Length: 365
Ligand code: PMP
Image (cartoon, rainbow, N blue to C red):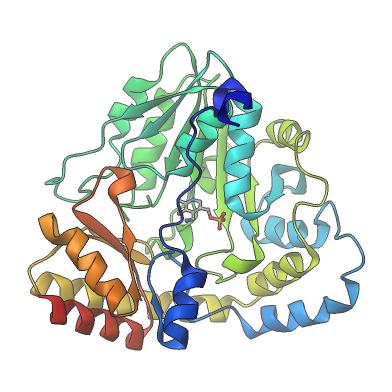
């Protein structure tokens, strides 16, 4: 039926989640070490679990289409207005929606090489063309393969409607400071919207966020998610923060009940449990340092990371190492789709999972 698709969708390849995790869970059982999807191994706040159970009685009712309670909590936490917020079924939905709303046939969208895979899909699905700005070189001192903001700004042309930029970036794990981001925004014409995808913002040690630039840049959109640091990937809650007029336009295509009772309640409860969040972030930072050191000691090149994953370069052995890890019940994320077949992306697991990953790796070496 490819020929029956609207032209923009012809030949488009669906998002590749890496491995069939359900099949692997069946095959290996609970000992499976899942390091392929940047999930949080420590799980959500107990308050979020309780909030989900509390919603079970309401399954036959539609959820609040406005997500008012969660939006109020988010507005208070981030110091923004309610009308600056839109909720999504994960931030993935919002990224798709942004391209759908602001880019179409004849338009261009700019993203960086080694940028998140969804930007290309969202752009093509919208009928627009993607311009890819080259990333920084592999041997860059602080941001190997990270975003080159000058190259991104240079790629913006008269047809550009939208720029997608993840900070920190997936899959490189690299992070741009707020001063550099601010200088970059000054270079972007006012009729070009810039989406800063902050799916991993909570992991950034300095606490910097593009949210602080919203007041001075009306064309800036910041997307966030509850899937990573808040450990609610399965409940699918993301949000975007932007100028109220921009949010109003996005609301036109939002599916009426795109986020559900349980996700709304869990996200609100998770937001209220700062202690649990900080505990998980500390565990992640500690394990990330241990894992990065262990891999570097073994001679592998590890990209610096301000996230809950590491991009590791295994050279020509990457494919064999991936197969060997899978055989031992450890799931990494292959990077061929990103043009990095020599790398694997490894999510930071808990202490035991990381040890089992390293053990499996040592058996292969
Ligand atoms: N942006 C980035 C950079 C991501 O890595 C991900 C998830 N892998 C997402 C957005 C989407 O996450 P979600 O839809 O779960 O919010």
